[in-house]
Length: 153
Image 1: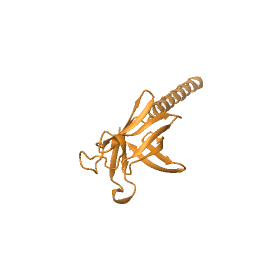
Image 2: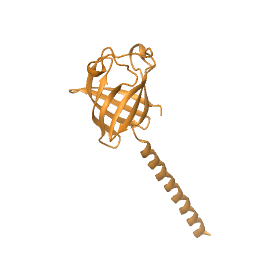
Image 3: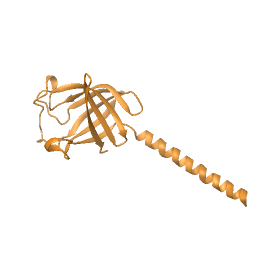
Image 4: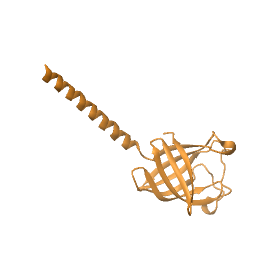
């Protein structure tokens, strides 16, 4: 009787270990920056309000992000502060993060971010705090600013 109980316990333990392995594998597979992300204002009059939604997608190993929704702006809003090719172009659909390459398990760098409100371009780094929280870091020299985005889908 003890031998049967021991074998049953081993089967249960094995099943639990397999389940844990599959859960960790599924979690790791989901750890990608590809998807739609929401930015909630963290200061000023927009604090607590959704300011933007961005879609991040991958093309040939390079990641880009574009605005897909700007709920606080009028439909058809254009980028009057932008320079170059972005000047006076619609903000929705505008690529403002580009050239990102995966450099670690949950890190992407080597690209740029364009701050449309100021018309300035910065070095960019993206990293996942967890599968549903993305940190976007823009840097000029040694000065960096972080913005946090939450996964929508």
